[in-house]
Image (cartoon, rainbow, N blue to C red):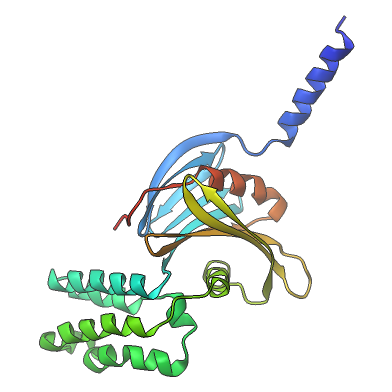
Length: 246
């Protein structure tokens, strides 16, 4: 016969196992846009590599790791420098596409007039990209890079809203909780949102600024209660290598 203490120990272990989060799976490494990361994929989940976006799926549930681009004006300038380097290397179309897809909190929350003034030197030269005068492109790049200095660094609240808007289509949501965490030596912000009217549709997002660029982990699809253990285990395992991947 088992003693009473042995029975209690077995019951405690069973309850602990039932309440645990997803079991650890394989360590994965990936380039998420500018970020080189390593994380532990929860057991049973699949990993789909889409370059600037990494999708982690279990049936219909999905977490997403995504590069949201430059966080501040100096990182915008770095991104434009990379585009100029592509142009100088003869990759004209790639360079133009990199400029076209430039995004940042500074641009998103600037006034309409500020955005027009910033883009004017570029649009004046490249309104017809295929016919743009090569001699004028260099000065246009230089003007864009100088133009980033006119923008102020984003406030913390602008960063929260920017991440929510881009990563979660955050319209109609409000932040209900936020906290800072240090994970493998890097500072992260973790915050919860819900629908402003119904107080339902809860979700969680975490982001960090790595070498000037935003990296976010989001709950993309699925119920919060189902996604939370996997979200927390992936976030706790996330390691970001110093410096941009590209």
